[in-house]
Image (cartoon, rainbow over all chains, first blue to last red):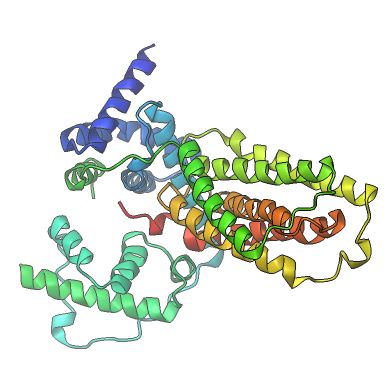
Length: 188
Length: 211
């Protein structure tokens, strides 16, 4: 009975989130993080803690992207857990493919010897500013950066997912990173 | 990044969204739009209903239509997390019934058997025309859901569009024999459904979903 009540509460929070209540949405997402951790651990046994967190964040993003598919008249947890399990299965497939096909990436097509491009200051910086800067990139560069750097896909996987050649992806990613450095440096 | 912090950022960036209609209603909408298109193609090509066709022909038509309806519903159910997987099996049952009816008809009434294996563009063109727009529309509608099982989803979508086009073909090419219908119509639908499954990840995957 308590579980039903909890699920009903979560469904109400999600309905409120769908209508734009960001406080309800924040409460919902924070509440389900432990559930998502348990779900991904059950789906993929033996995960490292860092991989669990990566997967949970992927599940949260996926929940966020497809929140239009939630029907408030139906239970929330089966909906959320299905998404988490699906992302966990995808992760396991990617991991298996990576281990089977691991090959060192060729060096990027352009290298820069100039001092200003070899900045060793790797402080994390402002994630929001980074997000905005990524959103402002041209489509091809943004997609390359998202797939290769944020989602850490291999070049082959990203090429298959987008239909773009590996060499085009490398160039787009390199140009995207260069543009991001310039934008963030100008911002700071 | 810390997971709790990431969750807060997602919540901060989120705006209101419009929930998708229930899968059955979306499937119904697709069927109505597709029926209008198919009716238009049928009218343009000129209906050619075989008035001497027996009840078995009607059963074949009904089985094709039922397959289209159930496959469409199953496709829209498959992009909603937590939906019952049972939905995906129903169109398989009606497709099997459709195949069985055509097979029985071929054995009972082998009229046109000698030409059944000859390629006929007069069959293919109406089928492609009738199925083209419904295919494009259903893929566009399905991309608004969650790409949980892209291959299964697009296979069902291909089955729905193909079966609907074939149901229309019964009206345009009513005189085709059962064996010809089995060899060309049913096989074309099955092949289209498999081809859709093969290319599905290019059209339905998480990287293409936008909030």
